[in-house]
Figure 1 (cartoon, each protein chain N blue to C red):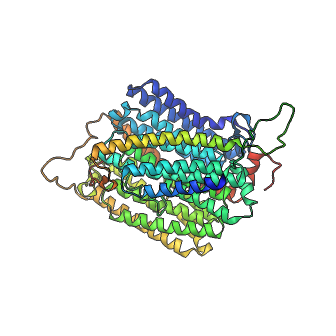
Figure 2 (cartoon, chains in turn yellow, green; figure 1 turned 60 degrees about the vertical axis):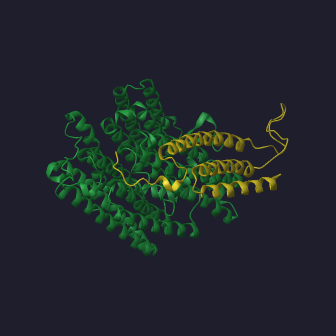
Figure 3 (cartoon, each protein chain N blue to C red; figure 1 turned 90 degrees about the vertical axis):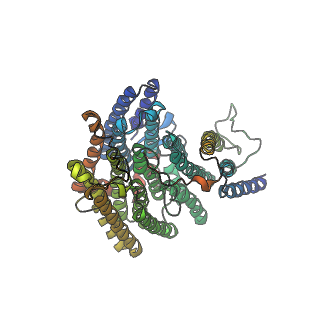
Length: 118
Length: 507
């Protein structure tokens, strides 16, 4: 399972960086999303994967005696997913707005000559 | 010492923002609430600073969960100084915004978002937990995205794309770093991380993790070669927004670098060399950019990049004198960079343009105002005895003691280029005669028609920040004492660790 996740992680990061380096804005967005998912999986993997051992303690016991699944990475991922969801939603709206304004998907068209600022 | 009141500078901005949401579309009320909130925040920050300065580090364990299991907030001298400087900048910008920002932007929630941004900044400075720091960074960037795009002009949106993409990328790198860090240590509390990282055998893995943090924070603080989003986006939003961005947002990246690289990863030879090299290139690229640009705010954007290098170089040398110099520069830089963007905005109000070729004759028309601006601009250069001069003495001293001659040379080049750029700006904008407008039209002056009260709302914040800058310059020994104290705490981290984890833990 770990090996599979490591490979998946590598693919996600590589694909994300590759997409970021393209000129299209939609691909930029996809790159950011892939990288975000990669980072979330990374925390999951680095925190250690334990199958079928929930961090729930017996009524009688005072301490964990067995290995148990660490709940903290899951809490971190949950937070990170919510945050990246918000950021990606904003990014989609922003890029849609840019598309409406400059009528192009190419990042190289983003260079309006120096205009007067506010 | 446990002190739950240290969170007040965060909470007061949260409440200010929420109260303003009740005054949606009532812009006068929002302005009053904003200035009041910023004033209260300044008082609370001053109180926190004096308390920490007199009685030592204060901590708060969120919901009573003891460190290292809960989320810890720590106010040491470094954090509380940053909170104090943020509150000065915040107050100045919220007064300036009352006239400096168009009403159309206020109708769409400029002020609430501005206070959410300040809340995020204060939270980031006070957090003692690395994942919590990440969350505050996200609060900051979400708020800054909205401030950046609010108004929706074409240039603004285009700048925002670059800003958004690079900042999300930086957060992803930061998050990856946190993931690896948790994997190798099993903790997120910064004090606990400091102990566990120091005990780790596999230094290569530690260096790898550190490089993720360098990339993440490096993008945020505009370090070479990751700086290019800054000059292409900071000239687009309104000047009040650019002032907060230029004064505080890049500095929060620098703060994080200082915090992480003095507490968690102690720079070894590899990291120190890397930081110094990055600093040299940051100074040089910022310098070259600033020399060729003609728009005032673009010049200032490149100067931000240039001066980030000074602080990074201080961190890279990692001696107590170098850290003192870098911190002193950081304090001076926050005040001055906020102010120069406000000044750029005021020039725009006076003349309707920020292109240096089309400007001129400001000194003849507004001598007093020009002198205040000159004071700030020459503080930025570091003309003795103004505030930019003292940090450089420390940096030079540290550079010569360490044998970092290349860095010293870069700082000298950077300082001379800043002098050249500011002198050019002074000559072109203030001394030169007003050039004739091409087709006989008179320059748009938005300042003259304003009533005296509104004029003072634009001028008072600049004078206020200039006074603080003057204090940093003329009473440098007091400020240097603070910087020295922080530098000492950075080299000897045991008080911080004891304050968080209790006296029984020895490093």
